[in-house]
Image (cartoon, rainbow, N blue to C red):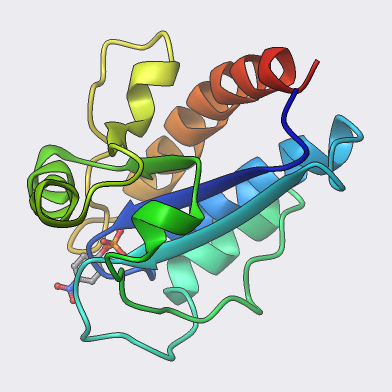
Length: 159
Ligand code: 4NP
């Protein structure tokens, strides 16, 4: 039995996909009554947006589903995250390459593709940054579905 499970979502900029994943997954955790047992955070492998709010389109798309991510601020991944977190869930294969490189150097939790917890044909969460608003809806659909799979896994671990 584990006292607390710590979950980290990682993308490139930490302004579109991973803060959306943090918000959606936090909301699933809250609804399931596990808020005291599960900690959720997000970060980016890049440093360009450190300290910034999520992209306005990500905030708006999440808000339409009743999820507030406007208070989140971007931070950059550090190798110590692999020690602090029990699940390190990346959005695409480039994130996986980057974070796995840190894992080879420093050990800790091995990063995984987040969508491995979902059932859809997608293995990666497509980067919506240079596209239209539809991209942000797809991001939310994919992370919601994978989030439910992840939560089922964590529930089992906590029981
Ligand atoms: P994210 O999206 O990795 O989902 O936060 C991006 C945000 C910004 C950039 C790339 C991807 N960028 O190149 O600035």
